[in-house]
Amino acid sequence: MVADRTPAAQAAIAWMVELRSGEAGAAERAAFDLWLAADPAHAQAWQRLTCAVGQAFADVPARASGAADAVGHALALSAQRVARRRRVLRGALGVAGVSLAAGWAGREAGLLPDWQADLHTATGERRRHVLADGSQLLLDARSSVDLRFSAAERAIHLRRGQLIASVQPGPAPFVVHTAQGRVQALGTRFMVRQAEGRSLAVVLEHSVELATRDGQQRQLLRAGEAAWIAADGIAPLPADAWAEGAADWQRGRLVAQDQPLSEVVLALRAYRRGLLQVSAEAARLRVSGHYPLDDTDASLQLLAETLPIDVRVYRGGWLVRIAMRA
Image (spheres, rainbow, N blue to C red):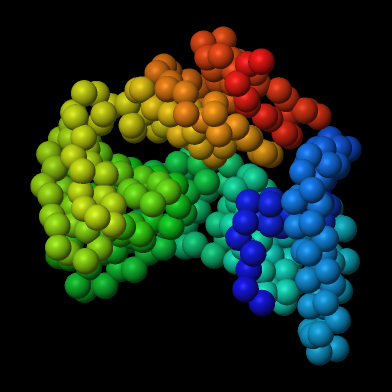
């Protein structure tokens, strides 16, 4: 089965993971009811998913079915909740042919980190890792990387989110790979963000060399400089405080500089469990200011006070909807 990647299907899988995790309470179930009733497409996606999972369990061999049942039973044991959630993503939902989509959607709703990555962070978590060569990676919330060190290259594959690399000298090049290209360290400290359809590099100390995925375009960046890497090339950005502001997440602060509200909401989602939705019209509003990442309620209040928007919070904060003020 090809995984359905429509927004409604992704949200349905996220809700299934949450409701079967053993941790969903009354607030989560009420928020699910609101989501289900909000759009006929939601109900259709939920019905398709439950049918697909049910059929998958009917089709698997007896031993596999028994294992899946054991996983489902174990999910109910509170002492094993986290471990069982990981197993149900890799096992039970995987049998249905939707494990990749389930993991992706679950992470988007703040339900799980990227378990398949070598290093990962959960919602609201920033973590520093010391690598085998002595270099350090600071991962932002909901970020994940794979490590591929060899004699030819010390490769970091950024799967999602963003990182700050503090690089130690070594015999092999230190390179951060994104979906659009690569960032090679020529100094010590830089930031890389994997965004939708492009990736951002910001040099904090010394310099880096950027290259598109096909290697046809290259760009040298020095301290204080930044650039976007996309499929069609490299676009340097003005130096106006970009290096300082773009990396302020390491101190728990989001610095917005005439950015669309959609980008601000995306950053806040990494620090908030649940569903944070913004209407298409509100998403286009331009935002400038400083917002605390570790207190998303305060950030949402600041946005409501400075923009012509309504921020509506449902059922204990699990569901937040942002729309233009009526």
